[in-house]
Structures are given as structure tokens and as C-alpha cells.
Image (cartoon, rainbow, N blue to C red; front, side, top):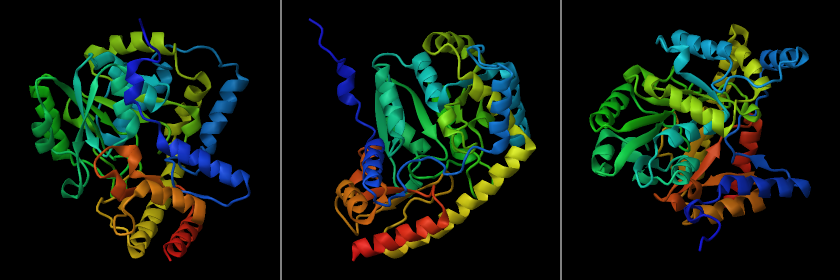
Length: 386
């Protein structure tokens, strides 16, 4: 006799940050002023050239299905972007435009994960990744990472956790929740390790563009057999448009196309026409100015949190997060976060969302609000701490 819901649901936790945001919205509805530092969404609006391109496409009646892998002109624009920014040649045939970066990850895992196969991920890490693996009956295996490796896995971590059931690894650089990055040598070594064991490497690069000591290196520089996930949400400020892309090893391109055809037919047509303008020089100029502003926010918030008693054991080199050790202030970051929003009107995300490795010691602060609001948040936390 079957039982419902499916047993896999028992291993899929709620996305706690979304529940925290719901509480913040409820408090705002009561008239409270809440400073949002919980959700990883840039506060900048979508750049005007992108909006103008969307408007023009709608007025021209471009509202019908596109090919499952995306508009050919958008795929070519993404390929050109890799040549311009990274100096590497990626054929447009290897690029799949997807329904958000989440759609790219789901396509990749649907293509690769066998029931019972193990996939290595960093802990802490983006929570949905392990749940996506579980949705396809795979087994996510967390690799505890901490200050010794700047909260990134190393070759030694892969060597320690790989076994006969291991099928691959999913890395992220810059990473959520820490903002830390993998260097080129480490990426190359881990790619080769997985390759030698006939496994598959997936690299999440959705925060590329939001790095503060120059551009990050893409994993595509270290082999044509690596899946790379990218997004229009973060650097390009298109969160609600729900558009991303996937760079696919050539031998899997047809498999990914079949999955996209069946799972969602095609990505949003208006979003795709808009995204072509994301790579225009005028748009890139706007985005680079915003990158500089994110750096100013980071450079303000990191020392301010340290002055309050948080320990900054992860070096935030990219994205827009600071993963702060709060153990000198509390023994329970989840309770601390709930008290902080209720008493001080500051929303931050507890480590509970990101894994099982010392979550009670950590809070993630997103610097996705303007500097004066960050300063107000610091003042409120100071008063909250007494």
C-alpha cells in the first residue's frame, strides 16, 4: 500500500530564510520598520536597457515559445560574454538558457543523478542543492568546511569523502553563505580528481561578476567536461525574471535538451528577449558601478560586525554575504536571529539553513541594502546587545 507524500520529503527541510522573510513582512504589515539582511536578492532594480528590451519585445508580439534551450541569439550573446570576460571560446551549442539557475541545477541533476549515488557538497552551503539531489533519489554528502580552508572544500576534502558510491561533486565559487572563493589551482586539482574517478563535476558560478579583487576564474578553463551553472539574477539584477543558463559538456547537450523540453518546454520568452540587452556595454557599465557599491557595503559592514563582537572567520571575497561567527554572543543562532528581528527589527539568516556543521555558531548577513540602512542595522544590533 503506497503512502503519501513520498518518503523523500522527510529529508527535505523548509527554506528557513523564506519563513524568516515572511515573519519580517508580517511585522512590516503591523507598521514595524525592518532592515532586510536575510535574503540574497540585490536591492538594485533591473537596469533600464534590459527593461527597454523587454518592453520592445512585448510590443512586437514576441510572446510565443522559444526553442527549449533558449533563443539562439541569447545563446550566442552568452558565448560572446565568455570570450569577452574570460577569454575562452564556448560554442553556443553548449549553452542552455534555463528557467533560473535553479532550473539549470535541476536539469543537471536530472541528467546525472542515479538513485543511491552520492554527491559531495560543502557544509555550510546553499540548502537547495542537497534537496535537489534528494529529489532525484541521490544522497547528498556534506563535507564540513571551516576557517582552515576559508569555508571552501579542498582536494583533501574530496579525497577524504570519496568512495565507491560517489558519483560527483557540486562546488560553488563565490559561495553562499560565505562569499568565499576557490582559486584556479584548487579548482583545477579537484576537477582532475573527479575526472580520474569517472565522476562528474558541477560548479555553481551564479555570483560571478560580484567579486571584489578582480574577476573570478571560471571552472570552464579547467576542462570541457564540467557543468557550470550561471544566473541572470545576481550580477545582472534580474531575480524576478527567473532566467539562468547552463554550460553543458558536449556529450550531454541532447540529454539536457530532452529534459528541458519535458520539464518546462522553454524558458520565459519575454525574459530571454530582455536578457539579450544584459550584455550591452551600457548595461555592463551600470552593473560594474553597482559592483563597486557592493564592495563599499562589504567594506563598511565587515569591520562594523567585528566591532560588535562577531568573529569574521570567512573572508567574503564575492557575492554579498558575510558569514559571521556569533558564538561569543549566543549559543543558539536561530533563537538569536528570531530575537533580533522581533526586538531590533533586523532580519539576518541563522546558520540552520546552510547545513549541519556548526550552524548554531553562525549568522549570515546580506549587504543587499544601502549603506545608511546598514549603518542603522549596526546601531540597532548594538542596542540589542546592550
